[in-house]
Length: 420
Image (cartoon, rainbow, N blue to C red; front, side, top):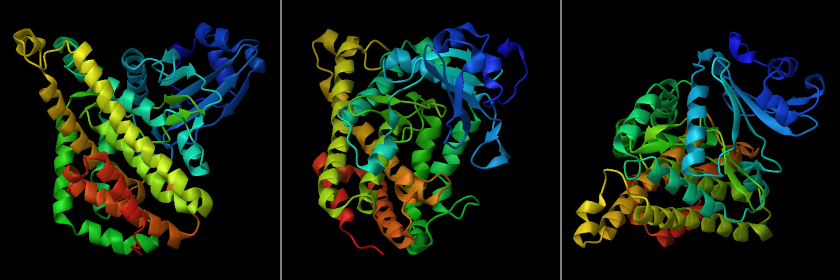
């Protein structure tokens, strides 16, 4: 059986033999494993990903490699990250049902997960580059972030369960270390694996001289490392979202850890803003304004539906040790003001984390295709500069843009700015 064998990276030739005897897989794929259609589709930075199809259906098989795929064996990475992705998928299914792919089989020694094949869903980033729209996109992502933030915290969970889960996820050391360096630190100095568009250098040099900015980013890193408010997706970007015209799903929670409630929301919004700023290179002039306006509507919906769902859960599922009803409703007092204050704090932090993500995706190692696929490097740098400068503003003064109309106006202002 597969789980009794020592770890071995799969390929299209060995996968059917290894998984054909696993009932949870064979029954969902169907037919003779020797006749399964198998293709390797992994285009991410870390893992092997296969689609396996048979007479009954299809599944996705994801296997961790013992190194960072985009770099190679010179950057080893522990296989246990697949264990934490599995744990995260199980919790996402409980806390935000219907958004993450269903898990059918998990093989811990093989660092292998077999899960639902999302079809005809495609990666959201490709849709945004192509100018496609997805109904309910902002609503779904906002509600997903709110449900995960609330239900993974001691607003909802009982304290022993929450603390045990924090203890479990604290074993995931290597993956958070990547976030701590690539997201919070590397963009702000000449780290070895950094790269950026050459024409962007004047903006980058100025950014890295901004000591107040770097101090604020490090304070946010302190929050990220020390704060275990809730279980995060940890890498919620437009490449970790799959969609049709009307259905939105979230994948790849291997960067999951316990951290600040605001982090996932900020990461998602940052990727929508980067899609927004990249659009002049991807759209004809006749389509540009309308599509960029739609992206800003998605961002507004992310925030408003996060707030609405969080408030709903505050009223209906506040059963943990935090803000207990014994202190408020049971004494005839409203807890609404406390909820308002918490949501304002979350939005402030989300905007600042958003700014950091806007920086790292053009200055650190793993870049976004939104910008990266712009072949004209002078144009790319011009659009990236707008993105970098708005990110700087959000980090330095997030309190000025908690109002969503002000946030949209800031994006529109930078979108018209000739920086380079």
